[in-house]
Length: 390
Image (cartoon, rainbow, N blue to C red; front, side, top):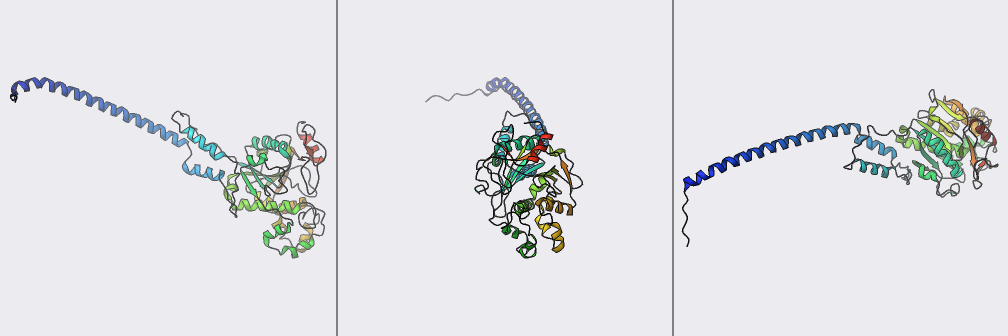
């Protein structure tokens, strides 16, 4: 067994003294360095916090993002069907943009949220005119006015829309609303206030060739159809106030217009209850093919049959004396205090050789647009006076 070594405490303490002093100095240096490091880190955190606050103040708040999502989101009809275009990929695009904005290398942030479109172009009725007409709509109406597009049409697979199952309108539209089609549109009119009008009003409509009740059994033309589509549209806007509230200007039009030059309707003055329509095609009233109205007046422009069926006896006879849809449109708008102004025509009604019509078939090729036919010669001639040659 090895002997236990005896330590010399005095010599041991003497040898340890210089070592302890050196250790204390090293600890002091490390402590000071740690303090400086912590201070630098704190300054960096404060600086980053200030930067993040500046960034946050320039970005949309969560409530604003929610409101924007509601404007571009789905809208449910009373039957529960989704009314937003299923092909609308705007949400996916927004998600991609958000992902890139959060990426570590992304140092550029928007100074303000992008403005939302303030006008809505609404196409009513059947899909006609073909892709050449619709391309003119995109380029010379939607793009130049930064406008959104809505469709209110019959079922996609209906006899009126079966020619265009892959129409680009479905892709471009932000909203798609569908209405039922009727063999007898008197059944549709019943939806407004019941069936009593068949006894109190229908007997007065003895002139069955003027087009006013076209679509009702025994009547020619499409007047009942176009006015009921307006009623369907008014119900959609009333049931979805977020759509009505989002837009300042509304354009109500049809799919078969070819726009020969730019239709810059956002420059039109809509004050004083003004409604703008193109020149021509009045037929004893105002044209029913295209209008521009403000948010404050758009529902009044659509409220045709409910107002007409409020008239009784002699007054009703007076209102329907001319008997055309255009004459009733003028009567209703006048009764509501709307002021009609006419703009120079920049579009004409067109058709492809396969398009169908209840009223007038197109004839005569459009020079410069192969495969497109013009429907109303007067519209075409007025457009040529106002637009460059095709």
